[in-house]
Structures are given as structure tokens and as C-alpha cells.
Length: 257
Ligand SMILES: [Zn+2]
Ligand SMILES: [Zn+2]
Image (cartoon, rainbow, N blue to C red; front, side, top):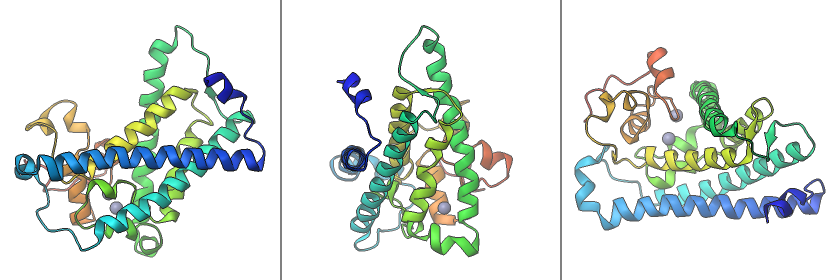
């Protein structure tokens, strides 16, 4: 099946359209699967058990979830176009994406994933700070911050212009960084998962995680809920190092449990 996928020539308009629609179905399905599961588990089934770990106790706005899902579907479509564009670049020989495995991949595949995440972090941190510039904020980033209290459905809730800027990160990275296509799928799945966890508004990592050697550098719901609450701190995506280094980490972060 995978061999057939590689033989699928995407370089014609009808084939590209089919690829976009197929990828849209996959990206949107993954969004509903992950966000839906976290919503049901933490907000419905086990609501009482997790109430104590809620970060921002304010109520959601009326119709918020519906709007977030609508923006997220538009984002999923843009991600599908970018993903198909990446396959076009791959087939035309412009990327460093590869498909065959060797023994070296045992160490190289995890390393490439870590490097891609660090590059993605750097791209996103500075893009995020730029999007908070008063002249750009309204056009790029306001939609995302309409969610004053974030929810799992906020994870893809972006204005299309912001979604495009986010969607080009990985295609750009793979033009320079050799990555097995499996690691790209892993990266995108991790991105979806961490975005849902960070917007959950319920801290699911154990108490004391922030003091742990890994937890110090890893973003969770508390970190990002403070970004939605305070606007001017906590710009990071996966990791805290840029916020720490640039002194943009919220002073309230340490105080939260
Ligand atoms: Zn922001
Ligand atoms: Zn957010």
C-alpha cells in the first residue's frame, strides 16, 4: 500500500485535489479524535475528578466551542494544502524527505525528530512574538485569543493567515533537514497532541512536574493557559527555553501548582 502511495503522482491538478481532500479528512479526523477524546474524558466523564486541576476557573463564552471547531476545520484544510504541497516538493526532489530505512535510522530518526521540534519551537516562538505586535495582532492572531479560556477545541482555532504561517514551518524544515516520512507523521501527531494538552485548561502532568529536569523545559496546560489569560507571557510551543532565555515566562507560572 505504501509503495502505491509513493507511485501516486501528485503533480497534476486533479491528483493534487484528491491529495488535499484525503489529507483534509485525515487532519480533521485526527483533530476530532484527539480533541474529542480529551473533551469527553476531562470535561464530561471525569469532570469532578479533574476540577481541582483546572487552571483558569472562568466560564466559557456562549458559542465558543462551535466557533473554535469552525476555525479549526479551516485550519485543517490549510494544513492539508500545505501537507500536499510538501509531497509535491518531495516528488519534485526539493526536500530531504526519505523513505528507505537503514540501521543508522535507529539513532537518526529520533534525533531528526528532536531537531525538527527545536527548529519548530524557534520558528514558532518568534512568529508568536511577532503576531502579538499591535500592528499585526488583529490580522493574524486575534482569532486564537478570542478564546480567553482555552479548551481542547482551541488547539487548531487560528485565523487562516496565522494557519498559513504555521503550516509552512515543517515543509521549510524538511527542505534542509533529512527526515524519514514516518518521523514527519510522528511530528505532526505530537503537535496535535501537545496542542490539545496545552489548551486543555486542566493540568494533567503530575504535581512537581515543573521542578522535574524534563518538566522544567516542557510546556503543559498551566503554562499556556497563562498565555491566554495574560497575553504578554509564555509564547512557547513545546518547550520553555525561549521564554526563560528571553525573560517572557509569566511570574505567575512558578506560583501555580
Ligand atoms: Zn498568543
Ligand atoms: Zn493558544
